[in-house]
Image: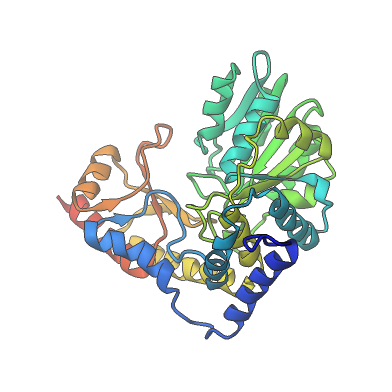
Amino acid sequence: MSNSNSISRRGFTKILGASAAYAAIQPANAVNPAAWHALNGPEKVAGIVRLSSNENPYGPSPLALKAMTDGFSLAWRYPDEYYDSLVELLSASTGIPTEHFLLGNGSGEILKVAAMAFTGPGKKLVLADPTFEAIGHHAQNNGARVVKVALDADYSHDLTKMLAAANGAGLVYICNPNNPTATITRRNALRDFLNKVPLATTVLIDEAYFHYVETGSDYESGLLLRDHPNLIVARTFSKIYGMAGLRCGYCVARPDKIRLMRVHQVWDSINIMAIVAAIASLSDDHYSAESYRKNQDVKHLVYSELDKLDYRYIPSQANFMMIDLRREVRPVLKALRDRKVEVGRFFPRLPNFLRVTIGTRPQMESFLGALREVMAA
């Protein structure tokens, strides 16, 4: 091409290849300066420890940061051509054909377009209580009735009651692992539910936190159950890949479901920086494994300290956890904020539970110190 600003798919691949080469020469335990500054710079200035949004405190991988830097030259292009590159990589890594994928501006966009496509007047939404609330708001705005089903005694989805409520439902939402409880819906219960739910009812499994599930648990990804024609599985790059601010997610579903959702999307809703970062992140298994390991190490440290304080907590399969304070939590949330520690919001169904993101070890030490002060007051 004669235009000096033009860049081809071959050039795009070279950008990603350069990022991979950059990562290959870095020490395995190299500090990620940009991610560290992004996390700690603003907090140091403001004095705030932010543990409220289930973010990955270690940020994106060095490959992703390098890909974004090299990708600045793509900023003048619409992202549709490069969209296909990410879909092709996801397809190759999962063995699922490309026509089964839909990318979104975070998995949040996937939830919204699913609500638009499968709920509405006369097509209710069934979901757990508590769970991630966004899809319930979208369904209500679309004119649907939202039916909330309380979690069971183990703080997991009560699929027996959800199945009974699904009669006439347009959509059932299952967050697995669940937010805010960080619990899983077990393999056999999920399989049984999918075998029994009417085919006219679409089931959306939100797997935003599936990378954090501990090995040996009774967990199974919905991708292994994709033969069900009414199933959608949503995932995101916001959590284990540290890309919450970039907004990139996707879902896997039958092509007919994809078509029904796609018509509700904004054109070109995913930016090129998110796409190149996502592709690079998928090439950096070491970094995501390290994020998982650090999350596990710090989480078990917090467990140990909570055991010493004699606080009960729900064992977590995610990068956050719920702690039973045995008292109404709203005054505690305010008192922690006064001490510049921000934790999760109030959940009416679990009024005595505090949700806290698993941050870095220094962050969690700050949280535990503030919690001791507040609870002793």
